[in-house]
Length: 301
Image (cartoon, rainbow, N blue to C red):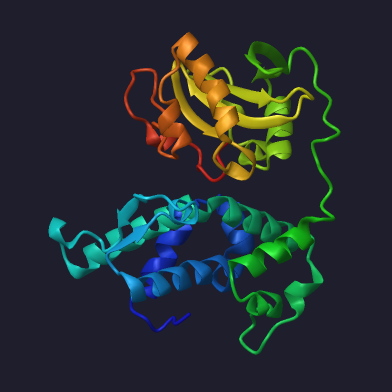
């Protein structure tokens, strides 16, 4: 990673913006992002630019041997005009969005580990090199190594939320989705916290408690035959805003198919956009876009 590269700061800035951590979380681990996720994001695009600096193919399509893989323009679209700074800004904003589209669940897992380590004052945070960087992060040479360390570091984390007992006022059965899977509506902050803890998303942080009962927002959980949550939905009126699986990953095809059938039946809109990771923005009661009222979408459901 070369901080001397004139575009590195731009890449780092946009990556952190797309990561969209709360101010408190950024304050907690901001110094750990550079030698971990920011570094891997930068290296990925440096390697990609050696092959093709203008576009990238979807790595999932490549991995599955797709005959016609999806591709995305990554050069900042110079044809749109603007100064070199404008083009660089567009380029790194888009690249940050794409990297999170490709590797978002891994990134959130690493973020959870860094947050937990800092809050527990883990010993490795004090084992530093001469630049003040934790040696553990330096030794992680790629994203896979960071994930392995995250797995080990979170292994001992207590599952807060497992002891939250819910009653009839906290969640309610909504529908039988088939194959013994059900849809449950989450009615209380306690239900959101427990769902967020079990699914490893930011419902557990309380950021969405204020939306319950306001502006026609509602939250649902897809449960397997044993009651285990498989996916979470955020809905406003008849519009699905978000639909994600554990760690904010895309729901499985099987789970998506169950919800598609139910959404068609009751007239919910926007499910396919939510599955693809391009949800519709929340709107206010005048049906105008109201992005300022949307909490940070880090691991949003």
